Image 1: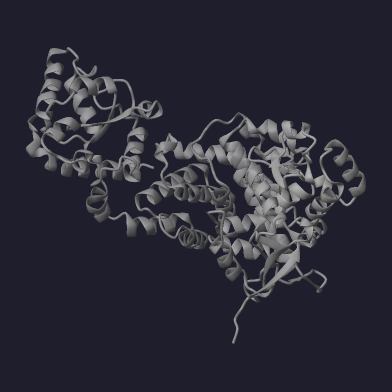
Image 2: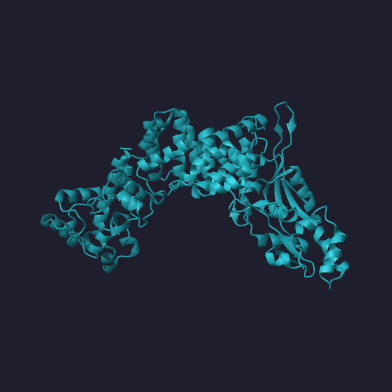
Length: 598
């Protein structure tokens, strides 16, 4: 018994292009940047000309949808693999403009030399050379006049045969008669299966995801403004990284400029903050989860298709409503007040630099919490506290490091069910017990990775408390982080290396402090028992040797800020392991106190 869930057919390229022009098949990628190089387009045309195989396209017909009047409608075919090849064909054979990586509309002209049977990307030299046809789209055009062209070409190239040129041009024009394979997935396949197929496809080395499928689904639906919605997501992400792109949008996409989406994102033209530069996946996750109270993007694809989760049928009203809700979520995501207020809250927790953000999903869910509580009209002071605590809790417990979609789904449903306060209290009781602070967290500090999320939380706690740099009187940890201050070793690195310690032992988080380079240079390779005694002496003599701290109380306070264990003035290489153990505990205690102040 066959369980084949697709059909395979060969279609002339002309049929495929006709389907595209008539809207029978949707090319969701057409509004996105074309990633192929012009030379790759040339190679595709050359392969077709020579009769070489160019791979299969994969399409899926949207499920049959119930319309409002009770009738049913077959959905369009959605091209889920092969967009770049089809866009290349449209650009080169039909002469259509494409959107390049800079979001500019350009033409890709493929030239042909009938004498040498050779294709090239058009350039000024080729356009001046009468042996070349600068743009094959003119040859493919239905208005092309063959006899006039052959006569003129032969006159311009005297050593050619009109019959041979005629035959060669006929071969070029017949490219559109060449067949290309189309694998069509059965229309009765459920969304989950199609999503799985989509994700398994490896297109040009880039593994596709649920977010890619969702973006394709959005762009393919023109009825509910999917094209503009998708562009709003793409453009926002691009603007967040490159604010100067604003003027390009104004010049290249006049139609989009008139939309509410463009007005909502225009504030980014003057924005240079890079703490949170979302990708389209981030935007979809946040908008979808905050509005639909679900965490799995495959559910978004199903809802945009009109799926009724109870009857398992597809209904036009559900698709229409789902697009409307998603638009609302994207608009709330892009809202200047929401976005800036959220980042202000994250900064107020001490995360002031993008180098301190190591979990994008933790940041995404924190934004979901913010948008959810805003929609619930929770007091703004409480929102700030909940968002800070949720973000730091997520980072400390690595909450979204594996199976983030399942975690998103579970968390938003619990928040929606019992409320943020009760749910956060439950998590803190289960995940942030005394066992975590006294055993688990110190163990997380037993690593040499300076980019550890737990070390970043430690630095955030120092920023939050307005701590000064190690041995600094006035310069804060925040300033050192913002101006790329250095991480230095309390037990100097070369001192430990001289005693035979390997890299993984001397580069320990519990041996790191953030301090001014000039102070660190003066300390050099000195043993702690030496330079800590000298620090005590400089407080007695009131002459600064290492930094400007010359008061013993100020020095003790500085040590406390940096979780420096007692009796450092007596420590030698023999005390290093004991020092690490004590400092891990002190760092953990500092984070615990910081967390409950959030």
